[in-house]
Amino acid sequence: MASTLPPIPRLIFTILEPLSLLAGFLAPFINTSNFVSAQLPSTTSTLTAYTLTPTNRILAFQLGNVYGLIGMLGVGVLYTTTDPRVTKNFLIACAIADIGHLWVTCAVMGGKAFVSVGEWNEMAWGNIGVTAFLFVSRVLYLAGFMGEDRIVRAMKEETSTIETKAR
Image 1 (tube, rainbow, N blue to C red):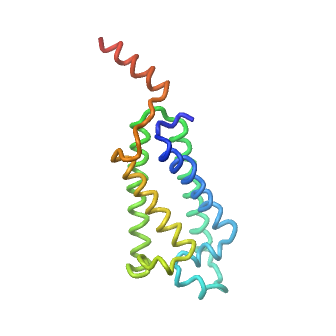
Image 2: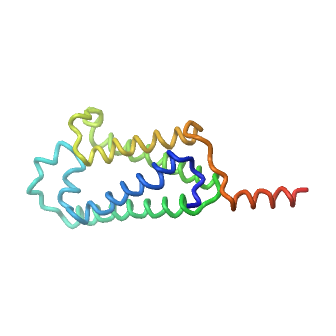
Image 3: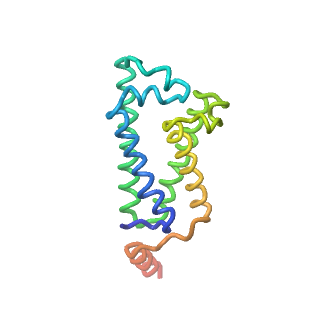
């Protein structure tokens, strides 16, 4: 693995996050009705017999596809780059997207439901709990609180080549 990440962020961003994104990718295809109705915790029990429109279905499948895309991009970037700048810029972009994801979830759910942790269903835990955990993890890593980046061999060679040319 080419990841420059220290051990804990490597575990979070190269294993746990891709697995959660895989779950987000599969969920609408496994049970579309539940995926759609569970987006808001208060509607889960009232929409058991909910009939999905073609619009509901396509939006659910497209959202699942976006989760799959984000997962593949993360694996592609974090497993192959030897440049810590690429890793950091990728995680900054993800942190910005986390803020947007949380904001949209709060705006639609309403502030009271957003903070009523005891009333969250599994979808709210994914949309809010997991996203907030990933956001905090990204900020802590980017602020330097999760250890120093590893210097990968290819990066060491590139750096020494640049230094040699500069002389």
